[in-house]
Length: 316
Image (tube, rainbow, N blue to C red; front, side, top):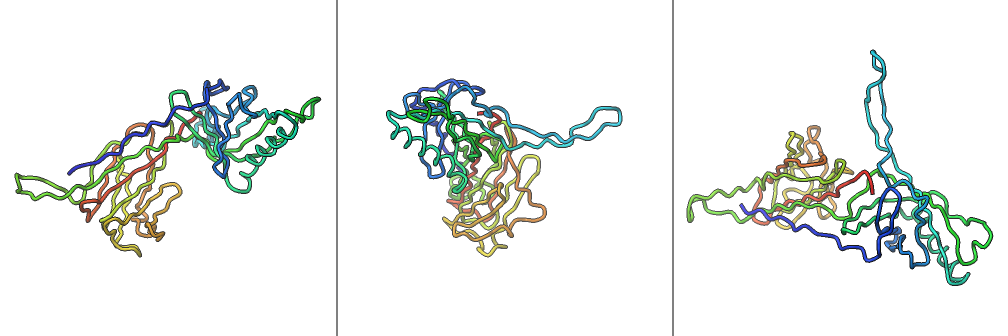
């Protein structure tokens, strides 16, 4: 059976020259507000840019360790819990005159504070090699004038504190695995041939990140039931015939998300009850290589599985 894989997409190199930042090294940083507007943070020719001195929170994620006393002394770690991270981001704002400075100051203030009303913004760190990582941020405090002599006329600086729900940085480019069923072949023509109508294949999926990721699956019909198995035996099954939708027809799709857990048809139907509870395990992908098997019962030519995930990292 032919197996079709998706090409690897290489991100473009940043056009703004990289600058050196604490905990990061040389990088180009961009803030993206909830409306999608991109604000360059390291373009030294712009009317605003990051003051490298004072930047913090871009290193490894913070953790809380829960431990139990050990009878022979000391303690033993029982649980490790990654915590939300806080990023401190000093910014200098200027303008050719007071009117221009005021407009820039107000625009940036709104770009950060609107995260409290419209959802998180994104801090994106791009490297000279073309790779980039991002993290969702909320404004906490710090957009205030210094109050020193000569400030607030054509320039001023603010030390912004940003709060991140997630402790880890995420790659801006998704990793994808595509498997598609080929046309079935006659067993005896022109010579003995095997063409499975069920198993799309066992494969090895590589997570290049530092921590586990929670993938998303998109299944294209025809298919009557879907089974995804990890090499260690963790497995979940979606029986389409047990859902309000029924078996997937040609071209119909279903999306299974592992975080948050959900299963939806392309028309928005909730297919979550069709999972094989309580045995179902919506498993994650640990760092490194993981053996994975996709199985679609009732598969025909055009049946496909697309696995998508974004590697996560400790640092920017």
